[in-house]
Amino acid sequence: LFSFFHLLCFILPITMCCDTDAVDEENIVLCCACCCGHCGLYNDCDCIGCSGKIGLCCLNCAVCLKPGAGCLPCCCCGPSCECDGCALLKVQLQCCCLAITAAIPCDEEVPPLVSVLGCTMYPKCGCCMPIKEAMRRD
Image 1: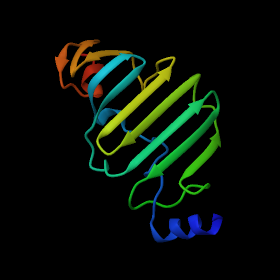
Image 2 (image 1 turned 135 degrees about the vertical axis):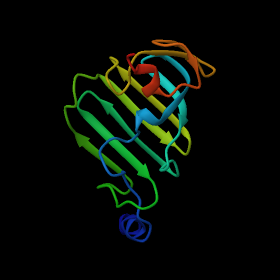
Image 3 (image 1 turned 30 degrees about the vertical axis):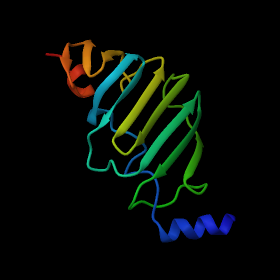
């Protein structure tokens, strides 16, 4: 079974995208958000497949099933231990055009936002607003 997955990873190149960020938050159009948790449409050219990174304190696990990338250390998932700030919990998940991000406490990648059915109310008001637009200071 172990060798089957390694063979599969060589035949079908699957893994994390170019950098360590599982989801480019700037390309998420908000559908709903409640402070430190967001759900939206992933508007990026690499939306085919699924990727994600889940962290609890300093323990992280990355998962990626995207065409055109190599294998992570453990089949299609990569456990790691890293201190990436002071987040107690951090989640970045993307599957096709759906993206979910959350962090406790909120940070630069997961800012505090309020949005219902695509209507963003905090920190700016607007409809179908990307996260980068909602966080832009005028």
